[in-house]
Image 1 (cartoon, rainbow, N blue to C red):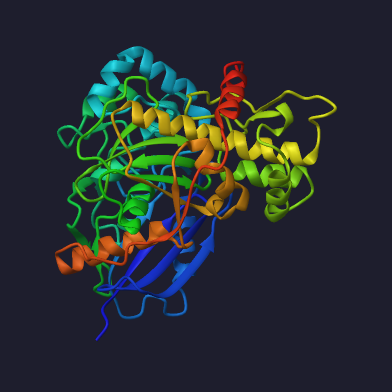
Image 2: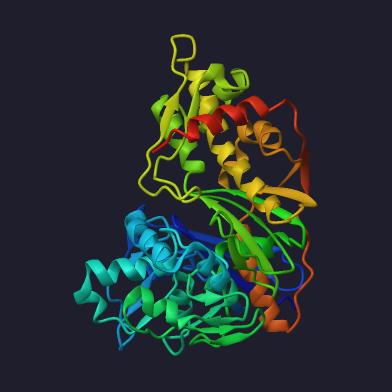
Length: 457
């Protein structure tokens, strides 16, 4: 008899659920429901999306479930467990000033040595400072601070318990990957007083059960779940092009980057996941396609028709500010505009090149921390772009394997659920796919981007 498990991807834009065979990982059923596109959202909408995605008996006969969720978002709860204000999501940059203040108060080195990361606007701790300063009447009502995946997991547990895992906890800015404990002193520094925080469970630990007896696993952050779904091991480089762009590597030791470029996260297996994140990834391609009056397929055709370097046109695509480098109030720029360079093809090419150059900077930041990738895996919605596939190996400077498209965050969450159910991590099929290799000299493209990036305020 087949044993079924479910994994949930609580992403920025949608809630996605897959039901898999616990022994093989074979996907049996899938569901999806979209969210409003915003930088803050009522958590109740996540629950409504989960219920919509699992309607029609999607979870029938499922024995265990886990949630992989967008990192860093802040959900404040009062003493009754009710939500105090809409959740502030990772891509809400209003806490940029709070991040700057916190870093100035303690120092970059001290932050990196304490929690493995230097806070930026995305981090939960900066959002705590922003609420304390700008909404003190709501801050007074708060009794607990949880992350998006923590909140949905608590709803599955009927509010009986607040739990998280070391992967998601490591992105708060007040939990240490070095000794596995909360730094309440840093939380108090940010918020002005202490708050309750979720219990940090081990990778295979059971959080509890749903009302109908399904085992609920600890869950984790979306980047950690994706690594688990891909079967990534030490030395694997994961390049994800979604709402955000991330480059991460499974590593066997914690990292502390005092420059702030690399976030020293944990993974979902007991190892570590140093990661660099950019705010501007696939949406750069979408926005440029809309500007050019075409779709993503049309953008691919235009970009591939242009020469490397886009005729001297360079886009620094900080369309939503930027996280790495830490420029939350920056805007995008186009440089090198001439009558010759102002063509749709060059603009399309500049958008793809600019987005990928930001990720190439991320690869360099990881290698500077002593991480040598054995292979690179390209995932996310943007990985389906033919232009991205053609340009990424050359611009990032590494051969890239493109696995078959799949919901790897939800798959990783399902694999964690199977782990909690079985007591051992199941060996599921490791994704394979075409390996893409560099095809042109991207050094001039990188140099042009670096020069333009250096002029951005």
